[in-house]
Image (cartoon, rainbow, N blue to C red):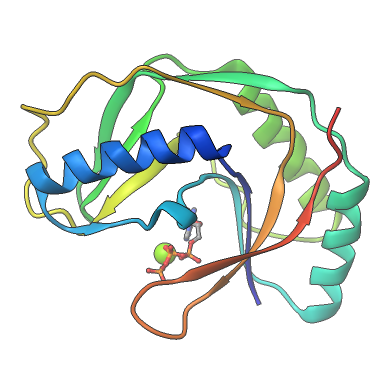
Length: 171
Ligand code: ATP
Ligand code: MG
């Protein structure tokens, strides 16, 4: 099964990100991420066997991460896949450390795929047709988080569905 670790936005933030996705889509075209799918990927694991997925679920349930506060204040894009995202203007030390810590644990489980760099972002659009940022509103959002979610990504059609499998303990 295809898995990833993510921060899931609280409902009020999800709604505000969705509103930005609407504005971005009107400006840039492409496919808007459904509100229910908005997230920040911390670690993409790819295909994992059922037994290992169960072990990882247990591990995540027993984990408690430091609470954090992320400021989203910039638009960005990945040109080739036409991804339009929002993220932080400045590197966020807490998120970088969380990413490192999680990959240390994943590697202890024998999982490959740790990337050489991590650009925290929330994807709003896929396959955008126009990538110019003119006319996009200023972004000024705060994300307070204290849990990581292990998510199963199921693609049985056009758009992947995300099913949460396990959540870390709140601090
Ligand atoms: P689909 O690929 O079916 O269009 P999706 O991209 O929403 O749908 P996944 O590919 O399962 O679903 O990706 C889940 C999350 O992991 C997304 O945030 C995606 O950007 C990220 N991701 C996917 N592949 C990689 C990768 N190779 N490296 C880093 N992050 C990835
Ligand atoms: Mg994908």
